Length: 159
Image 1 (cartoon, rainbow, N blue to C red):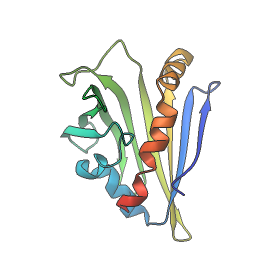
Image 2: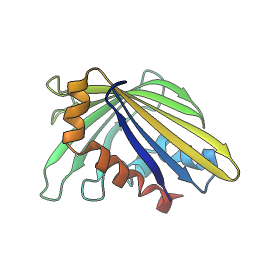
Image 3: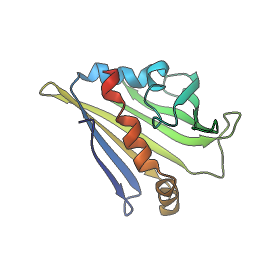
């Protein structure tokens, strides 16, 4: 099973997603550092992602958009803050306009992904921290919890 749990925590303004994979940490890491592999899972199956920029370094930025079933596009960006190979990534995650610029009308959040390897499996935990309860509720209403579950459900096929 890929996704073990999703846990919104309105008191601590977080959304935690835990996945477990029958693969070593370096293989799970690779699906984060390779934009072509990210495109195969970073969006629900009906909203695949296309990364147009990808500077995977501390201080670097990624820009992408997801394309919906009717051809509509939803943009996003990441600003990498911490990268520890095969172990942890922390980045600012936000919505973007059609030119890839941050959409200030939408929430920005910080996502931290960690990998823990043991007993032939790797546990991937993502904790997304929001600036306010309103921001968390907004993205939950937009379907983020279900979307990330569906997106991460595609990872096993890549491993």
